[in-house]
Image 1 (cartoon, rainbow, N blue to C red):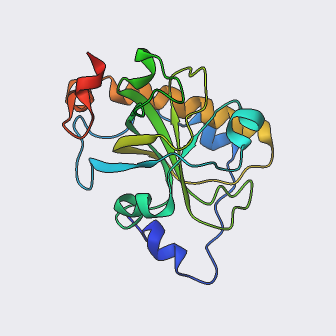
Image 2 (image 1 turned 90 degrees about the vertical axis):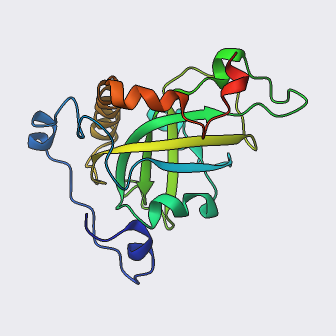
Length: 199
């Protein structure tokens, strides 16, 4: 699979991400991964949602939930940088603040970027999860659980914000298509999630 994200993070100079080309976009598959997850997947993640750079929702139309550094070790030590797919769940806090609707706490499809976001030239490794659901409020500090089930594509650099947005939108479709297989749908009911709150 190549060098893991954690190994790359220890290097003084990270290898530059390839520039996304128009050819790459035209040859992108609409479904990725084998018919059932294979090692190192599934990879379980959990931690409190923390504030990121604030670019996802405002700049890209794709709000993300960031996990703290210590919460991404399970994936950074076994996987390379790139875009991944799986399921995620926001766990409502006791006391009901912030306010989450019942539909907000279901196990939902997600895409996740693991890396340095070369277009924005981040200085540290991050895992940014975009849950494919319309939330009405922020949920910073709330516990989130995720199961990463497969790899979509490598981390890329972009010559324009529009090209990045185009790829993000394709990533979302690829994630939904790839999860729409019986061996992947099983993970919606995985014991990693708090299934009792979905009733």
